[in-house]
Length: 375
Image 1 (spheres, rainbow, N blue to C red):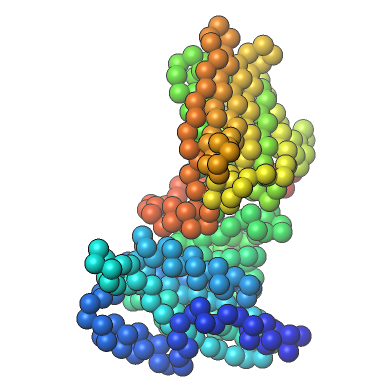
Image 2 (cartoon, rainbow, N blue to C red):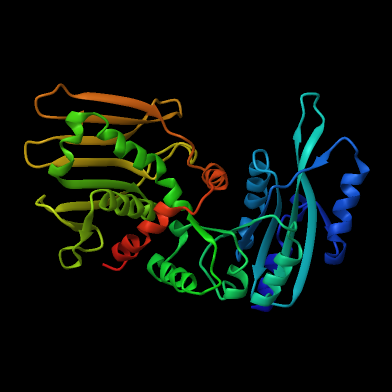
């Protein structure tokens, strides 16, 4: 196993990572780089650390950092950790520069990449904290399952923690682990889930269904919702369902629910129960950038009442659109089209980096999400 891990580290395309340097030379190497060219300026507003225990993400993560730094000046730390195998620490430095109108380099952000073999929680923590840009907030993007490296001495110094529950084999267990961390006195980070951010457009679309008084009157008569989600996007569907239940002030009835059909009952008032059904379907989208997590969301009132459908459409040339159809008794059916925004990782993480505040709505929805995952 040790040899296998070591070989994996050697197979990483290091030519994409810039110049390899001894760890103790990282800061001086970066200073020399910027001092050598007076026509460029170093820019940094945040520390962005991307942590992965998979070597296959190295190339893609470098591309992501390069794209993110076009809009978000930062010191980027890419940390690839292999807990097993022989002890090994290697480091590379490079800069990602924006080009000015004259075609020259103008503003540059740094990337420092670390490959850690035989690493421990202590090593990861020390490597990250020793190479932060001092006094700037730390956004820590944890890729994959939470491991033993995720411990109090690490998360107590994170300002924003970014995870992606779409890639977790057991999201219920992972969210319980985060809940345990939240109970720690030192856990002060703001949590972001890429799966939740991915639901933003769908939440906007559902709200738009009831954008006029006649449609709004139908809210209290809704009895059934169907969500058709693309393979691998169940967690985004779960976040959408939790948000709808929260907005309607309805509580999950676990006794009447299973893993794919959820029954919600009103917290107060006389409205009827709401049944929400989830269906998985292979997505035939032509591009990750335009292929949203949901293929269809349908909201139906009592028998003979209103119906609202949000459907992914394609113009045949690679451009994606949302198609909203409203059918309300006594009114002519109407529809709207609007473009699908990017659903790629860069766009989603960029959206997170632009946000300030405490991410209150997502935190408010977390108990409902955990309840849905444990039915």
